[in-house]
Image (cartoon, rainbow, N blue to C red):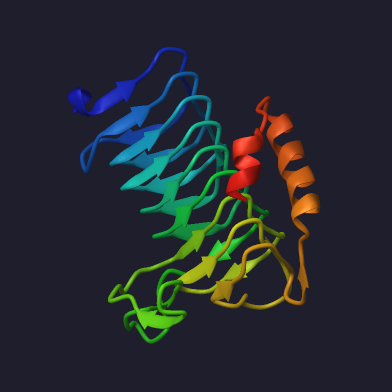
Length: 212
């Protein structure tokens, strides 16, 4: 239905399928949905984000400003300035700001036992039963995955973690991790974070640093 499709000024959409039978579709100002993309609502993408060629998105999914999203995505939330530019599956997940998922990063959202997933609790400092059958990952701001990274069901990845390596990653990855056995220094992490922001014409400030 036309009353469920909202396209803001400056948005560019070419050769796509936008299905509003299952929910509204909102395309933000100056956003771009590239050729061959198939999107089923509910769905929203905010200003200046890009949906890459041939992307498949199942709702409900929301994508913040200045993101780059490709591959296959289902029932997920992207905060602003985050990238999943290449092929790979992401479902039932929450992605923070300034996150970058390397090519062919895949996230499991269902256990092979088809039972509810256990997830790390920061409050209880242990794994707890989420009560959810479908649960992907929660990734903190500024974290990154290397190419071909395999993320386990119900994984929790902290802030400014650099995740890479063969096989499934641990389900709980601490902030400022560099692989499995090393850590970022705040100084080095901050230098990289500022470089990432400059690439898309943004600038981090003292408040961002104090939060980290």
